Length: 214
Image (tube, rainbow, N blue to C red; front, side, top):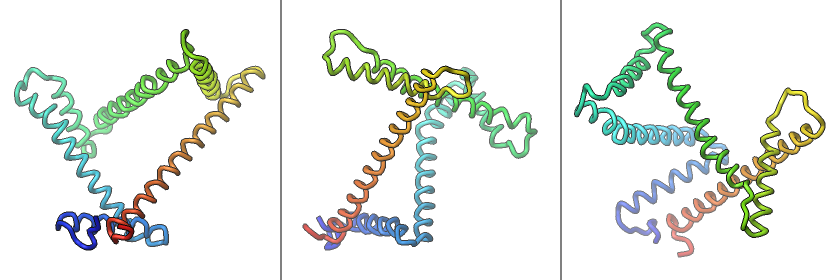
């Protein structure tokens, strides 16, 4: 399908908008920064509006407004949340000792959520995957043992500033090199994925927009 030669009006408009925005973003590669900056502001505005809409329709409405409207006296924790939000909104006009309360709760909750997610979603599954179980094949056993060794070395690599012997020092250095290698592999994966996106956008411009090769 080539929308350059016309299909439905909506498809044609959508394809032209996508092509123009793609050219604007690719224009940053040759030094055109002003229009690219406007596109970044547009993306940030659209993302902010979308997140605000999701917050209103999926969180504030069904989980705050509707429960309070249905039972105003039976949900004191929701009123406490409303009070914290009101305090945060009025922070510029309130005493510092009072305005710091919602910010401290938000930062502490976010840190606890991130730490809990790291432990439950990453550390515990990694420990579980590194356990060598009986009855498995030789390949599974070797993979589990290797994962256990790498996990232990990387964790030891986070030891800093404590007296330790040569063995622990060597293990910590090896763990840091393994960590650097893992980060390098992840960055390589990101670069390859971005190149795939670039090829996809160029194929879109040449095929769907200009109709070449179709």
